[in-house]
Amino acid sequence: MSAAGIGVDAGSTTCKAVAVDRRGEVLARRLEPASPRIDEQAARLVASLRDEAGEAPVAATGYGRKRVRADRTLTEITCHSRGAYHLRPRPGVLLDVGGQDTKVIRLGPAGEVLDFSMNDKCAAGTGRFLEVILGRLHVGFEDVRELAARADRPVAVSSTCTVFAESEVISLVAQGAPLEGIVRGLHAAFASRVAALAGALPEGAPVAMSGGVALNEAMVAALSAALGRPIEVLPDPQLVGALGAALAAAGAVI
Image (cartoon, rainbow, N blue to C red; front, side, top):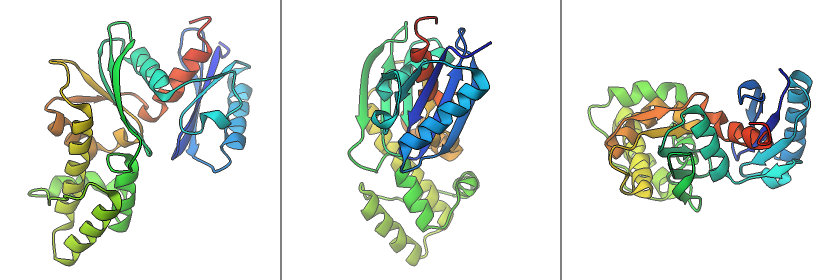
């Protein structure tokens, strides 16, 4: 079956593109580190998807959406909501934690956006927070889960600014604080910021998670603890926004 729509999510960290058929099934996908020349990168990814899945209209979302040549340009709230509801058609709360911002979106029974809050003014509470500080500690994402699990307790990281938190962590290392405790403490600090952004969640509402940070199991566990309820990581969490954009592009037939 040929493509009915192509979606591009031009994020600050990665660029994602998805082609869907008339039933909304994913035919092809692409994911790359974001290039400074996002217009050229997006055009190449779209051309690659069209070669594989056929010609189709394009919708763009994400940080760099205005630089993507597309038939439609849509907000991240719209696309992440639509993609999440397509994967899990039920009301609830979506946490989208990416490299540049964090979104908490409350979805209604038909997938409509009832309310949302967003942190896009500071790197604290976003993937960039972990990227910067874990990089300073020379800890790879592949080691995070094991280190956090080994910690007897989290080492408190009190700074609410990424720059100050980086200095605080360097000081903690110099004082001999255990690395695993610092890593667990970083995740707890991150989770507390997201929980504050989320506020009081609806009683019993299921919580799903999208975005690249959803691939970090230690972060998912920390968020679950901070919110006091389980979190379901959506399939291919990095592609949820691109999926929603693709569904929007194919809206006339889906």
